[in-house]
Image 1 (spheres, rainbow, N blue to C red):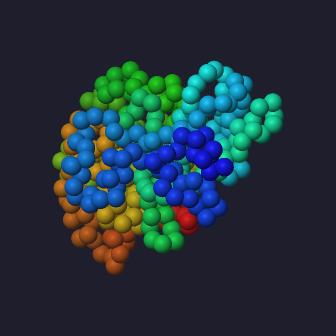
Image 2 (cartoon, rainbow, N blue to C red):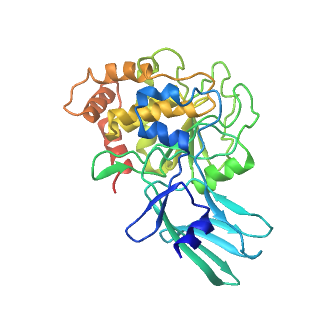
Image 3 (cartoon, rainbow, N blue to C red):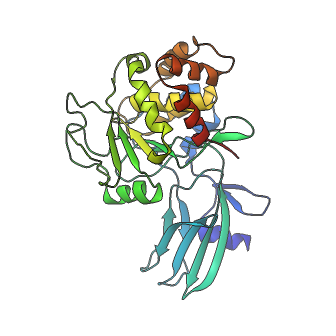
Length: 344
C-alpha cells in the first residue's frame, strides 16, 4: 500500500518520513532552497545570487499512470475543497502547487462518482511557504514562521510578491493562470502596491491588474537608501490597512519584491515575534528570485540597529515600541497580532 501511495504521488527522495498516522510527509523546497534553509543564512551567497528564477516551490506530483480519462481529482484541506482537476486528456502527472506548510491534505480520485483512491499526506513544517504564481517572481506567504513552541504566524493571510504589471507600463507580467492562482487559490482581496507614482513607476494604474473585484491600494514608498528610516513617516496609514480584517487576504509588492516589500515583511514579522535569524532568512530568500542584484544581510543589520535602540525586553516589544514611536497606533498593532498569530 505504501509503495502504491508513493507511486501515485511521484514522491521519491523528497519524502523523508511518515507522520504518526502513516501519512507521507512532502517537502515543497527544492534541494538548493532546503540546503539554504537548513544551513547558516550568513552563507546565502553560496546558493544563489538573484540572477535567475529559483524561488518556486516543488509541486506535489500526482502520477496519473493507470488513471482513466474522465476521472475527477479533488484535494481537500480539512473539509475545504482547495483544488479540482478533471482528467480529460492523456498526461503522465498533475502538478499541485501552493500547499500550506505543516498542514495535512487529502486527495480523492473518483470516476463516475465512485472513489477510486483516497490519499492523505502532510507538507513538512519548514518556512517559508514559497509560492508559484505564473509570471511573477519572488512570491511567498508571510505566514508559517514559528514564534515559539506553541505559536506561529498564520498562513493564507498576507502574501509578499513582485509586481504584476511592468514598471512604467500597463503591460501585464502575471499570466491568466497567475491571476487565477492569486484570486482563487490564495483568495486575495486587496493588493497594496508600494511603487512610486510620481515617476510613473507603477505604470499609472488606478485599479488592480488582478481584476476590479480586488481592491487596489497605491501606497508609494521610497526605494533606495535606508528604506526603514526614509519611510518611517509612511508607516502609520500602511499598518492601518493590515489592521482591518475586511482587507484580508492581502498581497503587497513593490517592483521586484525585495527592498520596500522586504522592509514591510521585516516589520510585520518582527512585531509578530518571528526570531531574528528567521527575519534574515526570509529577507535573503529573495535572492532565489529573479531580482537581478543580490541582496545582503547588511540591510537587515542596519534595520535591526534602529529597531534595537527602542525599549523592550523582547525583540518583538522593540518592534512594537519603534512602530508606535513613529506614529503607528497600538490598536493597529494589537489587531494585526490578533489576526496573524495562531497556535499550531
